[in-house]
Image 1 (cartoon, rainbow, N blue to C red):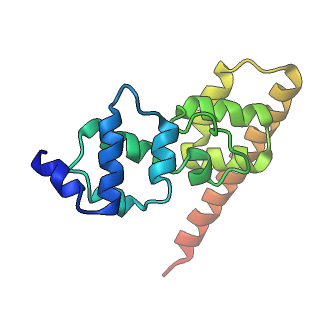
Image 2: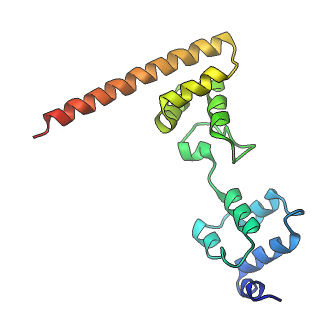
Length: 158
């Protein structure tokens, strides 16, 4: 047994990783990784970075990374079927549902300009287009007013 594998065998979590490693990159599924390591902290995963192959370490990190919808505080799991969803796809899904709070969170996180660019590329029905256009206009006005208020506050400071 190699030195790395011997070190892994010394701890319970190491033995779990060793079992996953033995399954191999072609046979291992994300479900198996999630079941085996889903309750591990980021630090616990990081301790094994030098002992497991890069493919396994990356897979464990990706499977256990918080979904973007959670990270952004969105009300729905827009990325439940794909935790590695591309930003523009996530934005499109949120715009399709057109829930104001979620659209506003996208605008705060990605910026109104990016959300508008994605919106222009998406194909939505006329009602959705009208609703999202109105939302983005209102969000833009609100952000502009907020920025103007902050500028006024800075001018008043001694």
